[in-house]
Amino acid sequence: MSRIKDIIHRIRDVSTLGIADIGGSAIGAIFWFFTASLVGVENYGQISYFLAISGTVSALSLVGASNMLLVNLPKGVKIQPPMFLISIVCGLISSTILFFIFFKFEVSIATIGFVVFNLVVSELLGLRLYKTYLRYVITQKILMAVLGISFYYLFGPYGVILGVGLSYLSYCVRIIKIFNGEKIDFSLIKTRSGFLMNSYVLDLSNALIGSFDKIIIGPLFGFVILGNYQLGIQFWSVLIIIPNIFYKFLITQEAGGNSTGKMTKFVILTAVIIALLGIFVSPIILPLLFPKFIHATNVLQIISFAVIPNAISLIFISKFMACEKIRMVLFGSIVFLGVQIPSIILLGSEYGINGIAASVVLSESIQTIYYVVMRRVLR
Image (cartoon, rainbow, N blue to C red; front, side, top):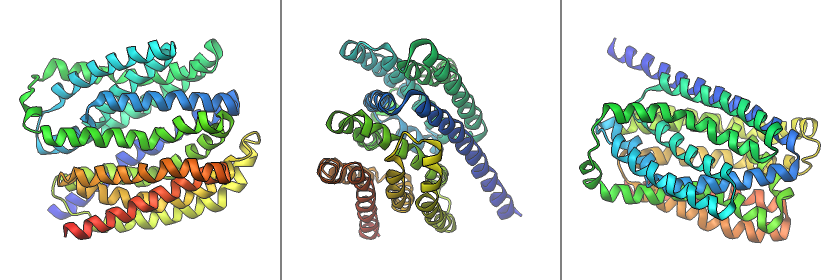
């Protein structure tokens, strides 16, 4: 009976995570697809460019908080208050610096919003408060859609960035509750300083994986190319929703010492099916919905192949993180960036946007090979 209850509990938790991520991603995807058709290719590229900068700078400000919370909270370590305080102070400083560089307060708002969002999401997942996570995610996505579209009509394309940033700041409610209810104990960070430093570099490298391609594509190849590429990436982010849902569940289960063998096989099988859907369905859907984004279809077809290695990498990352082998994950991110950055420049110069898309597949595949090899080495 206890085993049956455990299985039911896991199914309920995964289902809650699934509803949150699929529902939130669906709202977010509809918002971004509508925004793309509304603002046009070049403006969509510029919005992506500045949000990528905000995302990268927010990772600098988080000082490794995300992984610290995900790994330590399941073990009962109340590390939220000191990590929250340090990250928010750094976020305010970083957003102020960004304002004096670009003179766009929308970018600054988005930066501090990303910091707050990452802190709260990591805390909720670390504590396995999946129902609360569901409520926060859906509320934020609805706010993002309402504010982003409203501010576009009020302030133009950059109003979308402002709406996104303000929607993430809605998570401040959770931050205030933590500060009112918990003691700030910096000794908890001091005793875990080694893990924190590795976590910081890992968070930064992951942010670069998600953002640096856009930061270099815009200036090198133009915002029209970036707009087409970003739309393809936006569809790809929809394809990898399910693998990412299972990753969020796997890392907390692994950290708690629970077996996840059967679930990992299901994740890989699901990834194969999703990749095939992306390859064969995208030529039908994208030209009908986005006729101005003429290159986005090729981008999505190519990067759909990356769904499989991405899912496998997430499985290995959850195992490494759970046993605090964070350096393995850190080096994996470095491998990814070490392949992606030069391949974007070389393949993009030679084959255009198709070469840029191929760099994603190449980077994901080599990173996965690295994780497979390191897992065997550790065994």
